[in-house]
Image (cartoon, rainbow, N blue to C red; front, side, top):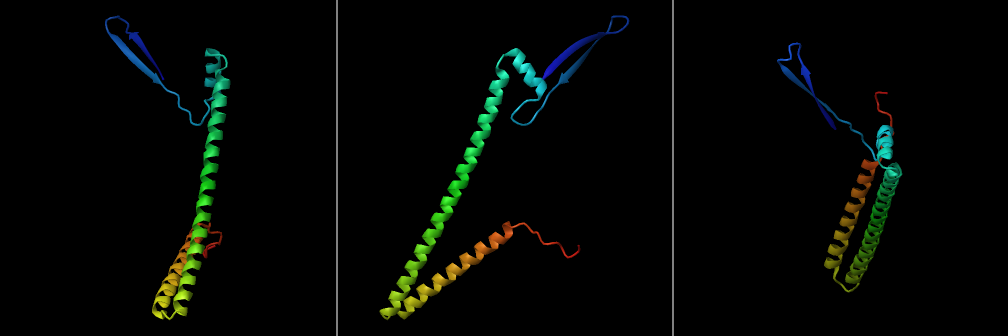
Length: 142
């Protein structure tokens, strides 16, 4: 941002009037506009190349972070699914065992709560998938 103060004299030089001018430049993105890029290079030879390398490194870093985040979400989801399957089979085995030793009330309670829990999780995940899908169906008014 630059600031210029220019005194302006009237005809009789008795009154002195001051005018202030403020200029600013704003740009978005990793790289400055070409005019500023040239100015950086004139002031410090090699500066434009350093700025370009910095932008490339920042972009690569951002992509690496996004890839790691995506991979960790996949891993976490897979672990959760495996844990749910192991827990479900363990509970079913415990239910069958309780039923075979004559503990039918425990078997019914254990099996019923497991079935209700699994059905609830299934329908919740199904509804969340439907919410994420874009609505490609044309509306009735078309």
